[in-house]
Amino acid sequence: VQLQASGGGLVQAGGSLRLSCAVSGNINGIRARRWYRQAPGKEREWVAAFTGSSTINYADSVKGRFTMSRDIAKKMLYLQMNNLEPEDTAVYYCNINTVYGDYWGQGTQVTVSS
Image 1: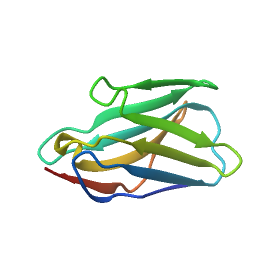
Image 2: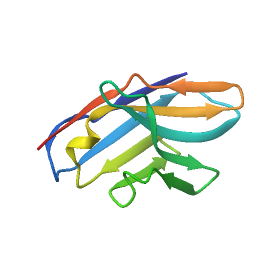
Image 3: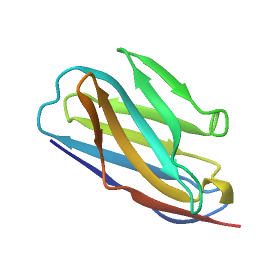
Image 4: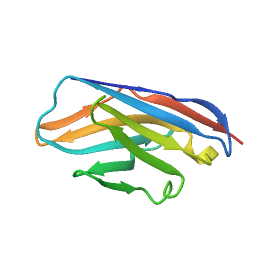
């Protein structure tokens, strides 16, 4: 099983980016699909989570600006990020949490300039 995150880059404040996460292989016992981020010098934090069939939750810091979605047939996760702020600068990771443990992507860098 591999998770491959992509779509990061450098953007000005107020801009948008769309992150993608390609999932290869079959994963059993999925409990949640999440995006995390880790800013320099800070701990990794949860950003958005898909739990169950359609429930999506967002961290307060991104609510109203970020939208998580998925394409089941293509085994893809997405994170649409709008109205980006310098505080959103971080490495973003996709994660699949299962009853057996966690799978992580390698991370994609998002840098927002002021």
